[in-house]
Length: 110
Image (cartoon, rainbow, N blue to C red):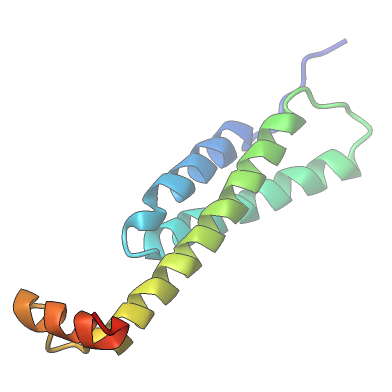
């Protein structure tokens, strides 16, 4: 039996890992890498379904796909957190530490 491998399996796994790790870079990089990983994973999954050939690294694609989904979710949550913080303190307080501290204390009632 021939050892057939899906063409993008390692790339999908690498992009999934990068997506999770880079989601703290304002969220956008995690989302971008996650979407690219999902597209490549879908291509490989379709290739696996359409052929009668059994591929040996399907689990790698599936793991990368799950990591990409986690990276996208974390990226979106991080973007929502940034929007929430900006709505609390305002754009003018982002660069002024003292003003930011005052507005946070006002918001939380400390």
